[in-house]
Image 1 (spheres, rainbow, N blue to C red):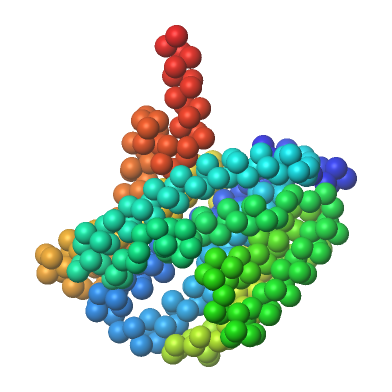
Image 2: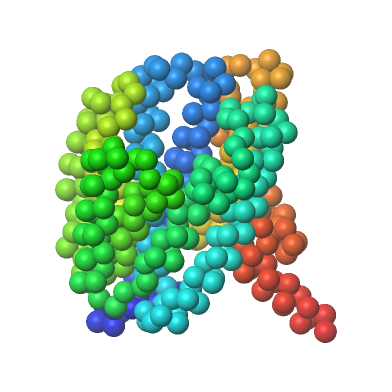
Amino acid sequence: MPKVIFKADAPSNNELHVRTAWVDAVKLFACFLVVFGHLYMSMASSGLLDGNSPCYQLPIQTIYSFHVPLFFVCSGFLYQVDKAGATPKSHIRSIKRKALALGVPYVVFSSLTLLLKNIFSSEVNNQATPFVHTLLFEPIAPYWYLYTLFLLFCLIPRMDSVREITGLFVASLVIKLIYVSFPLCWGLPDLVQKVASCAIWFAFGMLLSNRAFRHKVLDNKVALAALIFAITFSFLIYRKANSNRVFQLILAMLFVYSIISFAVNTEGLKLPKPLLSHLSQYFMPVYVLHTICAAGIRSVLLRLGIDSLSVNIIIGFAVSIAAPMAIYRFTLSHPWALFFFEPAKAMKMKKDVNEQTN
């Protein structure tokens, strides 16, 4: 289990299980939103849904304001509690591990997606862009999250005190406010924009690693009020396209705060911990494969003449979840295939097999 670096804030074993439960619950919820969001966007791109209608704009703009920030919050939390120390050497070792864990699936599945777009350019929603440039400088959805997360790991070391993390959070908030307020910033390189935009959520996750901070800041009554306000505000501004980034930040803060509060204070929404633990192993496979699977099944359905919106959404969502899970189950007995999703785990499995055979 992870260890907290705040010596005065050492958790009990039960609390560590609770922490794992809420993180897994939030990631599960965010993963479903990511899958649904990409699937729903593809319905408009395929002509099955009017992209200008409130039925499209409201859910898409609302979901996209906060679903990926939830992942960054969870990543920041797990990053901060992962090691009992914050030295330069440990930071370099951590970067090497993250480069392997995030770099392999990023390169493999970004490359696969770009290849498929080039091969089936007439049947997919977006035209492919130059391969090397895209891979290195303008990562495509949904894989940009992996690239941005790695950059945050590189730039932000683990910290020894709440005061240091608070300083990081305040600095990240200022950067975020500058970014959303000044259009000049929107012309910066793509990766700079992503880091500037997402650091605040990562820093907030790091703050959540402190028990006293969580108990003081996260309150379900406040969270309920924030959620009601966020839903109302979203309904008022997102019935048609609205690119106001300040509004998006306000909504993101409200939704993220409310969802994290409910998850933490209800110990993972009271979902069975064994179930959450089991489902957590599928986050990476579903995240990196769902767009490929969704595009494939959508193409099949349309070729069969099935253009019902509800049928495409239901079948598309089911396949986008089930197919990656099935593929991952296959890889668990084939280390060479598992390497594409979890390289460190695959290398350990291969090593264990070699030791058993020698």
